[in-house]
Length: 360
Image 1: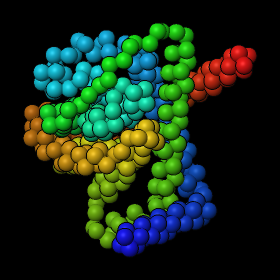
Image 2: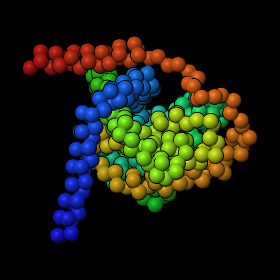
Image 3: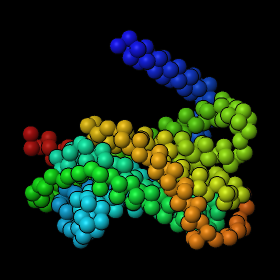
Image 4: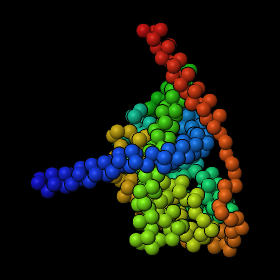
């Protein structure tokens, strides 16, 4: 008992020191933080919101209307006879593999909240319903860093292969269950509720990205990253790879088409980065523990690196990089559209509040 108290006090003291240092950094490095936060906000408005919001809203509508169960019936043979998994969970796995990291945990949390599955099943399924979107791998990494979409395909296939192996192992060794519920009657509130839910989730995701951008700016300005690089003799690309373990989008800063680092890049993409995992904590149901997720995602990252090394000659071959300075090949500007969408969410919430007040 005494050892547990000492361990808890040590953790609390360590956390207190970190938070105090972060608070001091926000007061000292205001300019650097402002620049980092500004870039993070633009990344959210230009990239994250346009790519994730529609998937979240539509997926939520599919679940609430019962449409997900109807669509998942077409995947029943694969789900039942190959994966030994309920078709509803397999559909979540399918959607999360196309939409991007946070959507799988959100769909599982929503199912858990509505009583459509149990806590143990949701925790197990979260381990393989986790993958970056193919657009991010092909565009942000394949084109922008390597000038080759085949690199993005290689990373996506490597991550997906490890997820499929994990899914087979988890589903074959554990009994995953879905509680069949009567499909609710469709009404006009499904659209408003789904938009509201997706907007709330996007707010959590974006705020997490902004917070990590501020923390990364403090670490940069304080010289922490420079000290780590000098102490361990890391190259610039190796340092960027280390930073990407914290924030996955740091991979876009890699220089000189480092094909030799592809297995490590695949491992980082399979892990997702600390920032992505914090987004999962923000989106998850309070009953959902992430301990099993942490235990399985680390071996999955190693498996992705191994698969990437094996498949590289067949997918990428002897590709040569022809771009320099890693300038973005595409200039994305979705600012106006994203702002309009955010205003629409507020209007829908305001309208729903008015209707409720009139009824009362």
